[in-house]
Image (tube, rainbow, N blue to C red; front, side, top):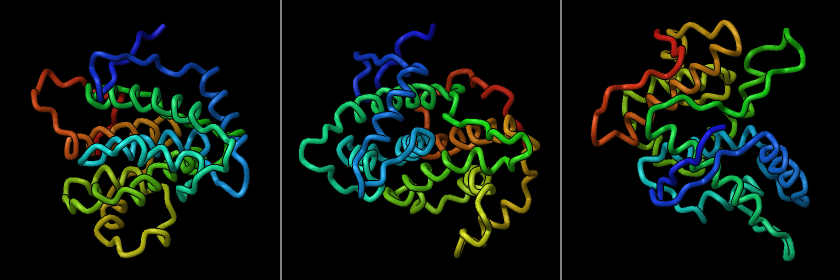
Amino acid sequence: MRGPIARGDNPGMTALPLTDVDIARLQSLLDAVPAPLEPLDVMALDGYLCGVLLQPKAVPAAAWQRHLVDVDGRAPPPGFDAAPIAALAQRRLDELRAAIDRRDWFDPWILPPEDDHAPIAQAVLPWLAGFATALEIFPALMALHDPDLLEPLALLYLHFDADDLEDADALLATIESIEPPADLAEAVQDLVRAVMLIADITRPRTVAPARRRVRNARRH
């Protein structure tokens, strides 16, 4: 069993990683969010949290939590308790933050498609949609215009339709130079690798210990 994760906002506090039971409960809580609110599902929420963590400046909890129950940030109706959703999301955020700070592997919440012949994009797009949502809501990362961001962003956005990437000629050119993943396992490896490459830019390590390689990361 994995041990507790040190919280990034207070290293003296710890939070246990979410179990499969916790993840299922989180999805049930999100499913119970009343209309017309549009909550993230757990896969999109996981990508969203990574997008939040990779911002060059820390995003206050109140700012990112308001988009969990509604992508547009609308407040839930009186009587609806969003605290359990926020608490579980905070635990996952702490787990992801610890992995990113260590430049260590984490398992993205991505489910393989039921159809073995389905496109890889079908499996990863929910996670990537959440990630892209975070970058849209919190634009500081994209405002950096750092050329070193092109490769990791290309590893992620290559799964999107090119028509959805407007005014992104440099990104599209980089995507065309990348070999697409052969299967879902490689796509997930590329996703984690991209997160770590972005972290090198927005969350640089003040001390450079012996680098721990992301497991099975591919090189291009």
